[in-house]
Length: 563
Image (cartoon, rainbow, N blue to C red; front, side):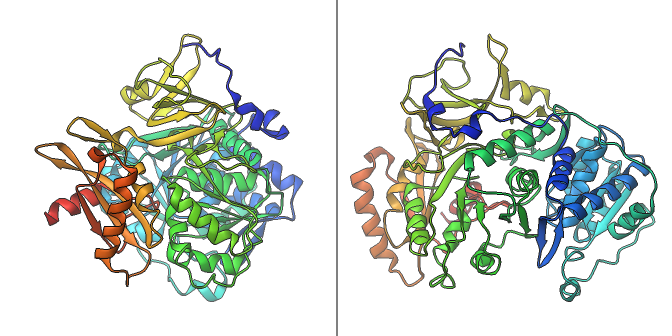
């Protein structure tokens, strides 16, 4: 496959995007650089506790000393099992300073998966919220773990909040348990020196894919992957400046949270407003309380904003950037969000992006002063998108739908311990360039804008016809009484699959029969007959995964149970 095609998206880049110089060191070096340039700027806010960059780097250095003294060395795996709390973030950068690899695990993962994650990485140390100690201790003998470093969710919160969730008092004769507070104090007293170790191409962390087809895959990401994400995203945004704030609600065990909410903030001296959990129903209150300059998250967040009564008379002009990613945002929903923002004096529109954990997170974003329905924007600087016939190198023409493949500095190193899946996902062309095969369908228009259709696995094949759920969802959400919808393929003995639409009304007092009659009338005008839903289900809310994406498998299972 030749790279000779000249893509037109360069004309949409700003000058900063055209001349990006990526850091050549590790993630710690980027944080250290920020602490030296902006020592007195606020690095994070945790329920009102604010810490400056000069103090954050000292905390990281102190923890790094103790980890090194415990025997942690370059390329060792250190598991961090936590939500967005300062202790976990400090530990992440401390491990990175040593050159260790952070194994980022969801604190509410099942006992079986926790065992899998620990054994995949052969971790000897786990740094974790004390809320997971019980399932951890139940599986500890089946792993290589030698030491647990625990902390409570509110230890770094203001004093009046700390007693709301008392630390778990769990001891064990099976394993050494230490507290983060002990580690931190020991680091203060330590006189050893720890040099920053590691270069751009070293693996810095492992994040996990969704695991929809079996065991989750451990995505190995390098220092360059996260650093280039931060620089590419920041300059594509081009709205924020040092001292601005970002509402960090996406979790650090996910690329969205770790790469954008935390590391991008720390690379550019933003203040990360840390939230330990994604509480979409109180997202509006966070805007009122903190007035962040940037919010970014999955569409679920914005669905709840549309229902907010607390924001009826609130001026949102403090927002400089609003973006959505991690899941599909229908055109109808985007227009509703923009109307909501503009009515509250917000000067910016919601921007869609696209990405995957294998690229850390976003690799494509709508330019600052542009908007194009259904498009997820243009690639970041130094990122190339191509549309090919699925699983081939045969490139398609502009406007033709095919598989999205990406070549970028954010592309993963591979799947940990899974060479077979790595070979499927990462392929070199005849010129030696590596491409990531996303498994997603889309196309590029004549202006170079990328249009994401959906996962190839989400395509519904009914009696041999291919049906695209998002087309149907767009038609459903035109109705002003619909908050959100989801169309899934349900197994059917006769047709293979049939499309079933799940609809969440904006309010509970909507007459369901009238609503469905109206929806059906509109859909019949906009959707081909073969693609029409065979059934419509009105529900209170859509089931979501741990990171706020729609749980399509649950919808199918629940529907089949009710048949």
